[in-house]
Length: 388
Image 1 (cartoon, rainbow, N blue to C red):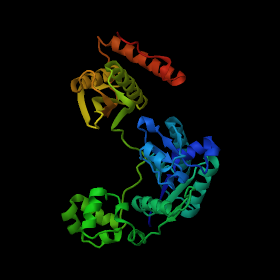
Image 2 (cartoon, helix red, strand yellow):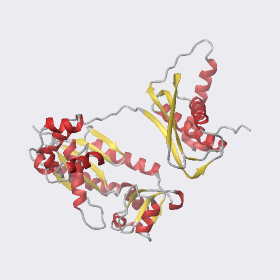
Image 3 (spheres, rainbow, N blue to C red):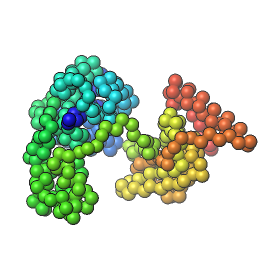
């Protein structure tokens, strides 16, 4: 019996959330993202703005050039995250087999639900719209690959300046026929380089890929060729993954203007380290590898890392390591465009208390108390003093 996999994508999610806060934005050309004078980019844009050629990841200055009347709204990431959690809770009310793949996308395995898949999809769309004020598009197929592409096909077919609210269902057994006429670059695993090579071979559609022998595709594209052969025929056996292992936790910032001041950069690293440490403790994790990411004004990007003797979830240790790494690669006064801190090599924190470790245990208890205060009153309620 064929599986029934539902893929849900919230339409222009950040913009949709902003419209629930300010209904006057509906029907207007607006974008969520950074200011053009601060090297901002478009994080999301309304469907009205898209009619002017504006799209996500575009520099905001370019978006304003294409659409001079564009309204720019600063991102409210905490709000978007909270709204996403409400949507995902609704999905899990339907089935525990939910795989969230981004803030606004998820797969559901609805195979065992005793209801028509189309009715399930229509009910989900209506519930998310009526209760949360958000539009969504859905694809349903026998596997994740085809379900996600079905959603994209439905969204692309929509016309006008309104959210697509698309629903596309691919019946079991019709996967290859559905994919065949679509552009090759809609297939997972076909990036710009692969797409260019395929075009050089006269391969332009997914159906063109499906006609090639698997061994020939493997010869041309290595192991990726095997996936191309299977995926082009609509084959995908991957199951829903309800939990994912966290591999790293990081924070980074692109400055609105290049920063040269040594103390300002060190202060930023300490603040980022505090946020990373808080997230580690929240997830009951600790890490052994501290990583620094730094970008110069010419966009040259460096990463450096160091491994600690024992796992940590403490901001002081993370911050000291990050500052040490920065001093090793940056000259005093050198301009910085972006800086970030990450921790990997994650696992459960080690809680070994030896004869001489009373001080560190007191420090840990103090940190737990600080976490509670910050959670209740905000991150700025307590901060480290600046050294002169």
